[in-house]
Image 1: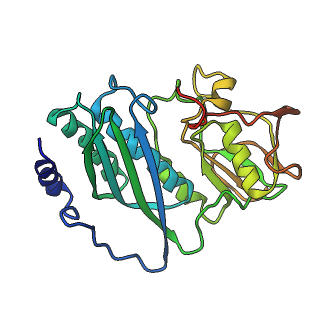
Image 2: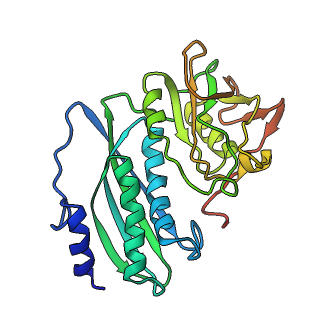
Amino acid sequence: MTEDSIIKKLRRRSPLIGDDCAVISSPTGQDLLFTTDLSIEGVHFTRESTAEAIGTRAVARSLSDIAAMGGTPLYCLLSIALAPWTDARWLDAFYRGVYKLLRKAKASLAGGDISHADQLVCDVMLCGCVAKGTALLRSGAQAGDALYVSGPLGGWRNKRAIVPRLEFGRKLVGKATACMDISDGLALDLHRLCKASGVAADLDSVPLVKDATLNQALHDGEDYELLYTARPRVKTPGIRIGSITMGKPGSIRYAGKALKPIGYDHTRQHH
């Protein structure tokens, strides 16, 4: 398995690959969205996971960021440092997972880089687009807004697969005042949204997936549902969980009590 043989194989499915850069015309009347996510062995997955699942999950996390902006994914750059325990069969299965999800999202693999390391590391960079000036940001929530999630929560122990909410995110364009995806737990991500918007929040209820605890939904992370706000009279899809209030930016109350913004922080802990 050489770099050239891998690239030759990828080119069959990805005609944009082959030169030093992919050449792509930018869509008119659109803002471009760029996001990147690292997937690291021992942090985001273990080698017990199937190669296909690792590939799918790596791409799904970046697609979720595009969904949170109300965008449409276009192109993917994927760099991978292969560990000694991988082989050609493993890599084929990994890319099978990547292609399966990209095809579903109508996005194309446009390039990347291949190297090796002691542990498997993968970096996915996605480019997407959204109509000019309509991207959903974290900073638009106002006091009086209703607060929603796109689906029930439960954290990584209860959600084995990531389902990027791309279609849902596009439905929120022009309706949501602020939006982000829940990757690090509702408590921490709501704190971030409120801080970016200079507001506080009152949580009334938290919808849970089967068998999940409230604690897992609030603090575990990796739900990848959308968390968003809308003006009170705007008809919006999703589950209402509370409201945005005046108060110390970033502060959250749940059932009348202060809720600490504790969630998954990559600089401080490991699963």
